[in-house]
Amino acid sequence: MPTVESSIRVGVPPNEVTRVLLDADLASRWTAGLERLELIEGEPGQAGSVGHAHYLEGGHRHTLLDVLEEVTPGRYYRSRVAGGGIAATVETRLEPVGRDATQLTVRWVGKGTNPLTWAALALMK
Image (tube, rainbow, N blue to C red):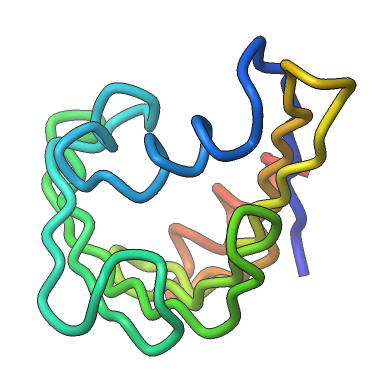
C-alpha cells in the first residue's frame, strides 16, 4: 500500500499544536485542498468522533469520511478516512522537542478504490 509521510518542526509546544489540530475551523489553513472540516458525531479529539472533510482539488469536489479510531491526547491520533476514491489510515504524531517545539509527523497509508486513484497513489510513493 502506498505510504506518504511528512514531518515538520513547529516552534510551539505540543499542547498548542494539538489545539490547532483539533479546531475544525482552522483545519483548512493547514491542509492543502481542504475547504472545511465538519464534525458530525462525537467531540473533537475523542476516539469514535466522525467528521466530513470537504475538499476541492483540481476543480473537483469530494468528501472524505474521517473516523478517529485511536487517541493518545496531545501525542498520537489515528483516523480511518474514505471517499473520493481512496481508503486510508492517517496517523498524526506530536513529539516534544525541548520545551517550546514539536516535531509533527503525518503519515498516510492507503489505497485507491478505483483505477484512477490506484494510479495517482502509485505516483505519490
